[in-house]
Length: 198
Image 1 (cartoon, rainbow, N blue to C red):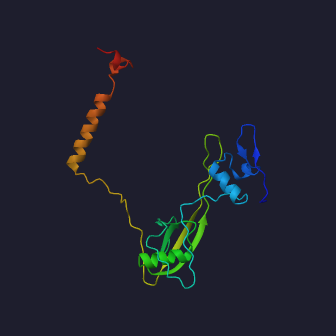
Image 2 (cartoon, rainbow, N blue to C red):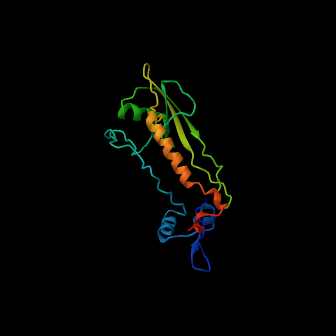
Image 3 (spheres, rainbow, N blue to C red):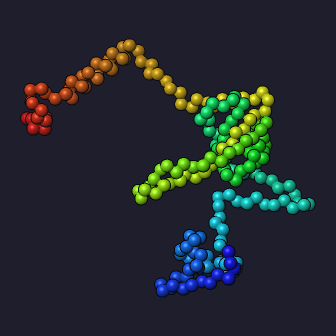
């Protein structure tokens, strides 16, 4: 991007740069304009949710992290996996080494191997203007546990059959028949609703 981009003043008095439409900055606030002028026409970078980890400098103390910036989610695999493989959904910024250290140092889980892939978000859904809505991409990690370690995803919501006795089932069916008989219309009325009745 050229450093000598001119700022134009429109008829309404709003300041716009020629590249503002391509970048998506239609409205300029004084803060953005002053940042833009001071930094030689560069676009301000948006601040994300992830804070930057300070760089290690030779001779400096070891950097310690007491609370990580990463949130990982253990998910049930869609396809059956081996017993020693666990599937996670992790942030896009997280690497294999980060995930290995996260599991080993925080949760004391021995890890043999980590494989990752980026799952593209679907864009099948459309909004009211018939424009496709793309869901964000996410990273999937497959963690192979160390030798002898296994993991089975717990059955969080087991399907339980109703444990009613025969007496309860019969009383329930009698009650349903009674309600159905009360709600049925009188055949002598010829289809006229009960609202017109006396």
